[in-house]
Amino acid sequence: MMALKVLGILGSPRLDGNTAQLLDAVLDGARGAGADVDRLELARMRIDPCRECRECDSGLGCVQRTDDMSRIYKAIREMDAIAVASPIFFMGVTSQTKAMIDRCQCFWVEKYINKVRFYDGKRRPKGLFVSCAGSAKPIVFEPAKHVIKAFFAAIDYEYVGEILLPHTDEPELASRKNEALEQAKIAGVRLCD
Image (cartoon, rainbow, N blue to C red; front, side):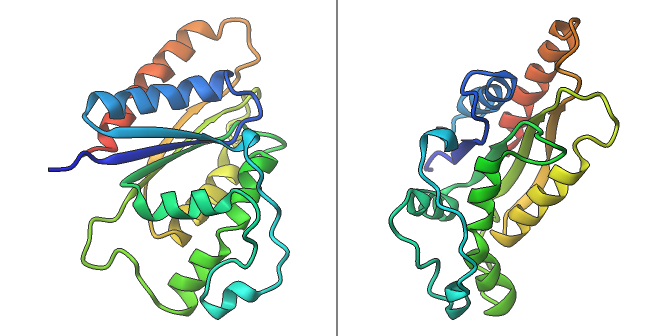
């Protein structure tokens, strides 16, 4: 039996910050469960914004072909699970993450307009959201969670939850962060169930 494939998409401009560390814990958990894992760093990729040209309405995919989105499109269809990791910027995902999500309109057209369900009769891949926020406000993650859930619905992945670490600006972060890292590792294992 082939190993499951799990992709981590890091949407943070900080490649070694709290969000990256949580994502790495998810990937470590998946690797420990026998999965082949990979990590894409959006801050190192060129992702042009959606031009809303509506060419994806044709069902032929996005017409922009000169940036790195083709790697992401390919990965979306090849993975068994994806963890999208983004810190919270102004109550939402980062611009790098949002640009990637906006460019996935072609999957939305495929599913909702052309009524093509890519995973019919197959195991639907799983989607996990990983995020950190400096704020301790109870609703700080809610707007971003709505965007991430819409993304996973459009690419026809099963949304299986989130690993969230709020109030990262507090001086006493260490114990909460260690707990979140453990939860992230467990979530990575569960992506392989």
